[in-house]
Length: 319
Ligand code: MN
Image (tube, rainbow, N blue to C red; front, side, top):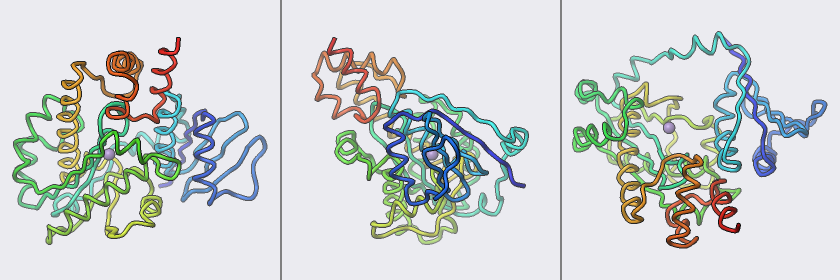
C-alpha cells in the first residue's frame, strides 16, 4: 500500500544553500510556480519555494526530510515541522512489521548517538547478537531500549556487554569541529562511522546472517557518502527504528548511549558544571557560563560548533 507523506518546514538561508548544493544532482528541469527548484531524490519529490518553505512529498518523505530537519535544527536552533498527507495510513503503519526470520537470526547491528546534542561526542557502535543470545537479551529487557533512561542504561549495559562482541568509535568534539564542512555533513559523518565499526566487527565475526543499520538515510544516499571510502560493507539491511525491531541494533544503541553518558559525565566533571543534553535554550545558558569561566576556545573541545547554539552564546557575550 502506497502512503503519501507530505512534510514541510521553513528553511534558513544556510540550510537552503546546503540543500541546493547537495540536491543539485537530482534537480528537475521544470520548476513549479513560486518554486526556486524541485528535485527528485529516490521516491521523494522535494520542492524549495521562494518563501523558504521546503516540501517533501512521497512515501519515504519522513526519511528523506529527517536529515534536513536535523540540519535546520543545527543551523537555526529550532524548526517547525508540518506533517500532512494520508495520516490514517501513517498511523496504521506505526505498528511496524518485524520479520521473524531476521529477528531470530544471528545479526550485526549498528546505531549512533550524540548527533542532536550540542555538548559531547558522537558515538557509533556495531554489536553482534548470535541466535543463542536472543533469549538472554529479551530476559534482561534489551528490547525496550528506547524507553530506558540514563540510570537504567548504566545498569543494564554491564549485564550484557561482556557477552556481546562489539566495536565502538567515539568522534570527539575536536575531531568533529575539524572535519565538518559542506562536503562532510552530519549524515556523511554518520555513514563513515557506521561503515568503520561494521567493517571492523564483520571481519571478526564469521557466522552472522544479516547486517542491520538503524536507517538515517535512504540506502543509495548512504552508499553515495561512502563513494570515496575503501572497505565498504555492502550487504546491509536498513530499518527505520531499527533498535525497536532487532536486538543487535538495540544492543548497539544501548552501548553507544552507555559510552556517551560516561563521556558526557566526564566532561561535566572536568568543567565542574552539569551539562544539559540536546540543543535547547538551557544549553545556551550553560554555554555562556562555560565561556565566561574557561574562554571561548573551550567550546571547541566540548561542543559541536556548527550548531546554532554557538552563535547564540557568542551574541550574548558581545553585549
Ligand atoms: Mn539511530
